Image (cartoon, rainbow over all chains, first blue to last red; front, side, top):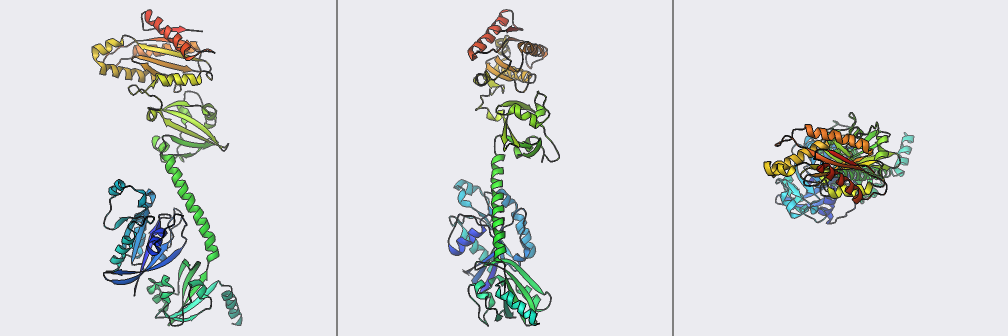
Length: 158
Length: 384
């Protein structure tokens, strides 16, 4: 089976671990527990281009005083960048995360999750301008989580 | 050589390191006994290591470089595997084989995780508090021993500075009272509301002692509190109810003070001749003129129509009359828009112990009527 490494990146406490837990286990826990280092999860996915095993890297989030080592990015076919729509600084830091990842993996695919969207009402959601590589997501209510991973996996398999 | 073997055996028995030998095809060649504890299930000889260590997926080129002697080793740090934190070190053994060393760093990483958790929660809390403080309808600054140690974004924006590291802003310099430090300002403001004019705005200044060492000052812009504080929308002055309420609250506390009622002479003719819009302009101009010539913490209010109220604090009646004479002269010499000249009549009285709002306002009003009866454009006082 084809194995594809995908890294989940973003500032701390944006919901990276929760998105993975929702996608892999179908569960959610409100309690915030900081990820340190890396935790890997696996999930088999069927795509139009065949089956693959996703090796999902849940990587410790960046903090104002700590950047994560670029060695974690090595060999990734794709990335999901996660921001917290309730914290503007996480959106401001998004491009920095993308630039660092592309520097290591110039040919990799990526996608952006604007997470914690369950907080928004419908009008606020409508006002959110998103391109085809960005999704409003919520690990809490399972909004757009499957489609997020499905979309990036399809791209990585092409 | 025997010693080295003994040392290695001890290290392995301490569950600090485990090892896996793999060949070029990622098949397990040899393995230490404790690997199963780290990986949940121990791989068997000949099995694909990537089934047990998917962490190596994506590092094929690094492994290739080690086998080819380009690099000697590669390290992946702090990998959470099966409730252990492991450092995975990929090392050259020979041209056909590499060693994967698994170093158990669970204890130290758990300690780091607790610190990281505490740090991240602190950053989030700090960020939330910062957001709350920055959204307040007040400018906030905190001092300790007269050093400004914090100012919120509204404060910095209002004074158009990025930080107060290189630039000091001393609010007390905007008061008429001679004060030379925040420490000296505090007792003046503590438990009271002080009105302070900065640039073209009026603020309510409050002070709170925090932990006996820090002093928190807040500035609430009066113009933003117009509903709450009864601000007259035409002139920007307080309305009569606020004046009365302020006087009531401070009658007992006040030292010497004077209350003044002012009436613009012949103002009905201004409206009749120049129109009500012109009349409004004159009222606005009059209010600005007087505000610019009284102290920041004196209270100036619009009673209604062309009548005004003034409270001059901490002053004897004689000094208040002198101040009023200055104001009288300023009005006489001022050229008003639309109409040119304008005069006003003044009734002034001092407050005494036992005064009520009605008694003091009645005296000032009687004095005003006497000024009108005497031919307007003058000051009449009622001393008690």
